[in-house]
Length: 123
Image 1 (cartoon, one colour):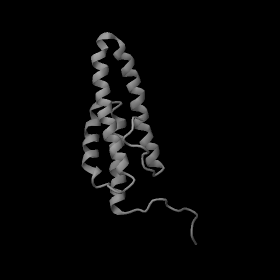
Image 2 (image 1 turned 180 degrees about the vertical axis):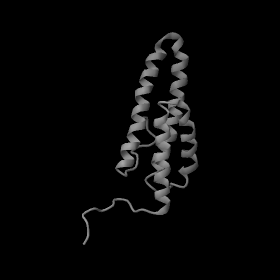
Image 3 (image 1 turned 45 degrees about the horizontal axis):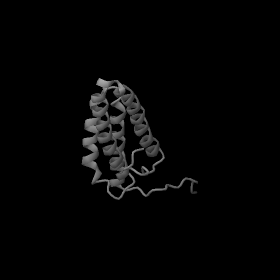
Image 4 (image 1 turned 90 degrees about the vertical axis):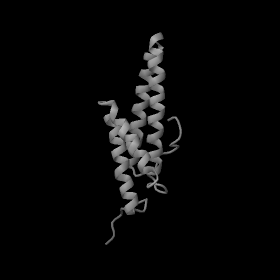
């Protein structure tokens, strides 16, 4: 007897490994809210595993994480420098909200077993 559940994406050992590593990367990014340094190993893992995930839905997750890291770092530098003229505090607050969205979206996509839409975009 067949159940009504059908899997949308074919699984392979490579895709399963990529899925696990995508979870690890995104968990490290979540942990950066408590200890900012964890995003560094997260981006390193994303760079290392991006090639292995090529052709799977998880490749977009690694691209998204890499982009999130570099845009976040750029925003933090700009916001930090602008703190001298007080506008930087507003920018850092907005950066926090942006980072929060960029960390939550891939978790939702991973739970849904979906690729990231427009991984090279700003949002």
